Length: 353
Image (cartoon, rainbow, N blue to C red):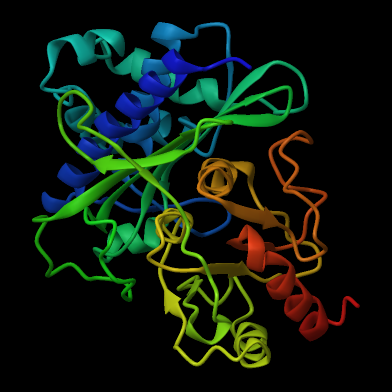
């Protein structure tokens, strides 16, 4: 089995560097939201983080394809926004020279930044090496000072081999209890986690730093011996998951704790380290297809931490079809030993049995 050691190191450092930019954007209050075709907000941080990550991948793996969320058309048409993004990208670097060198160093100019952003247009698929990037997953969480994640995953022939999540607003302490979304008045002290996994090698967490990688520690999901004590992780946005059905599932399982709602793949990281137990993303539309960049890294991290991740029909998430999870409906993530019980309750409530 390939170790993917270099891919993992580059991915971790690339996410860490991109997270530096996103934190600067937030604290300097230069979010500059614009509106995409789907009306969701885009920030300076999205464009800047994507450029930095793709630059790092190009330095080490120039032949690899990339599936990424953003395109540079908006920046090409808006000189002021373009200059603002470049003002954040240009000075962003890791404080460790060797780590920064591994990522290829700084992007040379504005034109290169725009070209890098536009390298994320791969259609995905089941052949070759393809990276999936979500530069800021949970943009609305980012905007209000809540949970968001910088997400990067490598797929080889449609199978996820490496996954990394940078979660700047999660507590560093893996033993910290799962709490609701934190807000903009919180300080950065004690926050910032880098989750990562390589297939067959387990999952880990480490503090999210500004230089080389800090020491990591192995993480694993909690043993869920008593379902009534379980904690649910859910989405803040009601459009992302059916909250009423989630409440019915909790009742069926005997879970009495209120669900903890937070944005982004920070939910995957939280349950992977045992801060929560179950993550449900229940379909709100028969036609909606999840994007691969919203799940690839978290899916691998949870599975490598001893969890199981399927859709509501019990099928593994299929990242080999294209830019979306076209063959899947919803997400059910839980400790492997308890996943069957959770899935049964999900299917009963959704009328799938």
